[in-house]
Structures are given as C-alpha cells and as structure tokens.
Length: 176
Image (tube, rainbow, N blue to C red):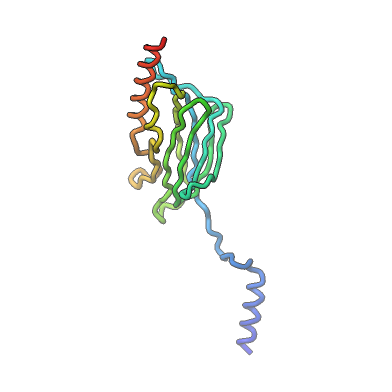
C-alpha cells in the first residue's frame, strides 16, 4: 500500500515539473560590455573624437556571428557576453581599418556573478601608403584577472596605436 501511495505522489509531482527542467533555476551570468568607438585623428596631439556609425560584431569560438551592436548617437554601444566562453569582437566602419579584440569570459566557479567592462576603441582611417597589417590579428585580449577580481585587457594596443599615429602624422606632413 505504501509503495502505491509513494508512486502516485511521485507521478502527481512529476506532472507539474516540465520535462527536462531542473527544479532549481540555473542563473546565467554575463560580462556586460560598455564601449565608445572613437576616430583616431592623426595629428601631432593624437586627439580622438567620437566615430559615427561604427558597428561591433561578436563571433563565438566557432566563428559564428552571435551579436551585432550599433553605436547610439553619443558613440556608445552595449552588449552582453555569457560567462565561461570565448569571443572575437570586431569593430568596424566603412573607410576605416577594423580592429579585433579577443575576449575570454571564463571565471572561477566561486566568482560567478555579473561583470561590467568599459572600453573605448579608436579606429584609423584607411589610407593608402600606410601599413595596417598589424590589425589583421587581435590587438588585445580581455580576460578575468583574479587579483583585481574583474576583467582586464592585455596586449600592446597602446604601443600599436602610438606607432600608427606617428605613421599618419608623417604621411600627412609629406602629403599636405
């Protein structure tokens, strides 16, 4: 008799649980990316201004397009990346040299929460006579830094940008 009651109770309870779903909802955590796309104006001061109409495309580890983000009027864009995955982000605009950034959203299990990462990226105008091949690969990696308890960039982006600004200044001084 007890077996029949337990079996009936189990059947009644399982009727209210959706098939394949766990009783405990697994919370999804993200890395919220907040960015501004600027134009790298090559002059002696290296001033940057907001670049209108830039597009940010996000690709997953298998190189499938997962998101496309357009800037708003103030040059800002925002998108989310799920934790514990890898992404390639390409920032582009017609007439400008695209830049690529690798993002690894892996975090230790005990650090699962929502994170925010703020960035700005400067695009150079595509100009004949200037070698832009350095941008054929990722200019930076964004990874979790356990010491700082958040996501931080790694790479030579500052050095790369300074080198190209010098090339642009030299180019414009020769061609003006």
